[in-house]
Length: 156
Image 1 (cartoon, helix red, strand yellow):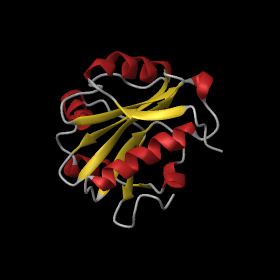
Image 2 (cartoon, rainbow, N blue to C red; image 1 turned 60 degrees about the vertical axis):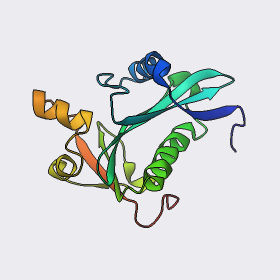
Image 3 (spheres, one colour; image 1 turned 90 degrees about the horizontal axis):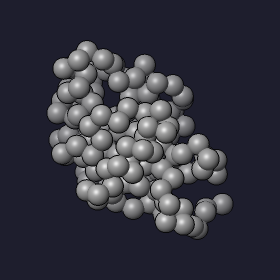
């Protein structure tokens, strides 16, 4: 069942603090949140922020940047709604693939498969997460995932 009081809206320049707070409370890295060349969304319930997600764009591919729902709002598929909205956006902009780094979890339920990190670094070399890794050598996650968008966004 879809929570009708929940809306996902495009984040504007004045939403950086909200995105950072949601990511921080979910235990995600907040560096480079809403950097140039990215798109973010805020999920709200009754006008109050409860989630956020972002995409770092490359040429024909995007890198998922955080998918967070505040602990008190989890359950009911809200995280899935956030992820699927980002996947649909990436496909709509013509991306062939969408990538992500993960510190855990099985992202195959969203249609992702594990891939070597070098693939991401080659396809989205200017993404803030990739640039930060190159600069500091700090791996963004334990696993790297890719979803092929050529078959459509709604397959998961």
